Image (cartoon, rainbow, N blue to C red):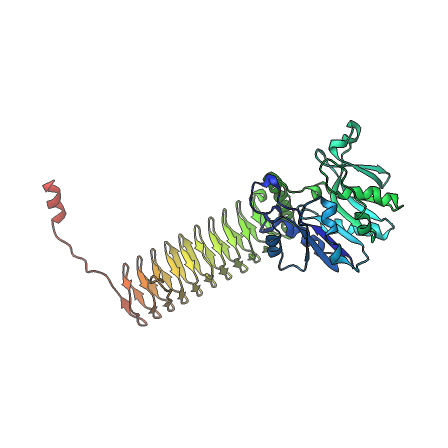
Length: 453
């Protein structure tokens, strides 16, 4: 097995943020997590993350990953950062893989290709990509597949600047690595120790330095908000393409946002503007309407979410539907054939099979029995100012429009609640509950008022 080192870059000054650069969110997880996960896919014996600025926050963000940390207290360059990992890798003979924490598009297969070149006799392998516009990158000098140098742009002649092959910042090294790092000098304008200087040191020892060609997008690093958006666009394109290959229908796919943690089944249909986040899982044949947001939500096969619906921590069973313009808050459970319509909000409530709440209702901390109809404007008043209370509604009950059920309260099976009632006491099974002022009609009153005007 191989030891791997990830260089977690510090905060980019051009991010204009107090958040360390590598912790900026990218499709639901921190930027650095992509580099960590790519390395972990190769099953390393040990994975070291070198941290500098914001070290404690980076450690907290990666606490669930099997990594160890080395600290670069003073930032003196990339070679200096790598040297901080040496105490944690004592006894590991190599090879060593080095990546950057701000290059989230590197693929595990590319990293493996670097290691494979060491097995074929190279002492050092680096990732090379060809860019249409290589401005800002160091240019690689080659003799065949051998790399003979890396020239920074500011030091390059016009002929060298015309080279489009650049160093993408990922490397594999044999066991000579840490000895070589001690030979790196800081004789440059920035007085820093740079990893590309290892090319000359390895060659001076008679070791082969080779390049492995990767995809151009794998070189994309993140130092600005604009670059973060560009990387996110690439990741989204990859995700969309992967799911469409697996049978998901996306209408205007370029408008759909989804995170790597989302799971989709074949024959799911996603309309424009859909946002899918967290541990959302969508079953076969489901449809998600335009501009809906689903987060940590489960749609069982055949469930439907109509347009402009927001569901967070909800669970819809087969045949259930919500929307348009519904809001399902955490703990909302819609069993088979339940329909929650426009401007209905459900929170921490279980709606059994066949419940209908067509429009303009709030169901919080409630359990509603099978086949019950909830009228427009119904509210379960679950909060008394200090504590939440539960409302229980039985099977095949009918709750009239604009009623308020003041919890804790129970409505029995097949009971009726008259429209406009405020229910503060339990309603027995099969009873009619009416709790409102009696209507009075004053004959001629309106005509009299008009004549007075």
